[in-house]
Image (cartoon, rainbow, N blue to C red; front, side, top):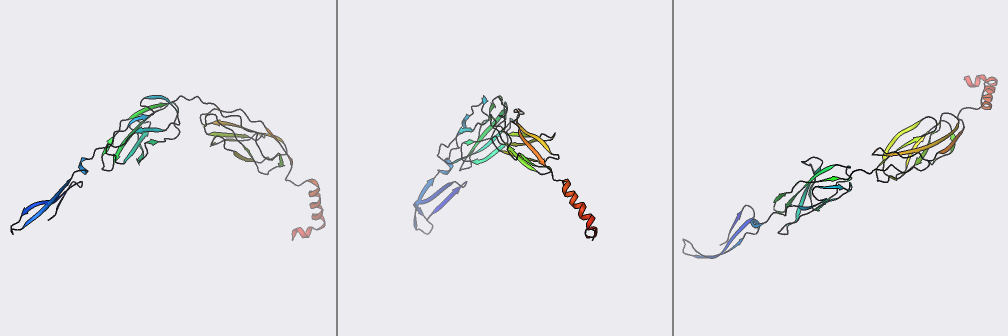
Length: 262
């Protein structure tokens, strides 16, 4: 005879030992085994030892969040991460196994709130404390002087030409670029682009002449660089007909008027 009792989906009681007398007068041997392991599970440890430390200031804007977790029974643990500038921060990661989180580049001089909740394989949940830290005050520097624009140094009017330049921002900020074409026109601010990325812009000139192309840059904090060294260019050639060509056309119109009218 064999009897199994299941309680709350975790407790298994197996009776398969002992001797029982039945109405028929026959004896049955019953053995039993009791397994309480499932119902004796402990919840995971409450997340602790936050990095950056709770209440810390002047924290690097590229910081990585980390904490201590684990489980007293050695069960696998997953974490939910809550992070933001609200005292009740939104959830930004669900059931991750790592005890680190990269929030990306943060804002300067800003207070952040974060919390870690822990879960084990038996659906035990431990809600963590809300921690805070404040990022460093900006010591922003403008982008370096952009490189002199590169591209054709002569061409024809009304033809589109492309020119490029690049620079580095000491703080690693993204960068905007402004191309001045030397004819009273410009691109306005283009971007933003990553620090060190080469940027191109195109332009055509309407009149023959000599021009100087130059570039300046500004970062996303608004700090502007000085102007680049200028690139001198000339537009000596024109797309319009010159006088000898017009004379030839007039000559053919005079000699063969019917050909052009047919």
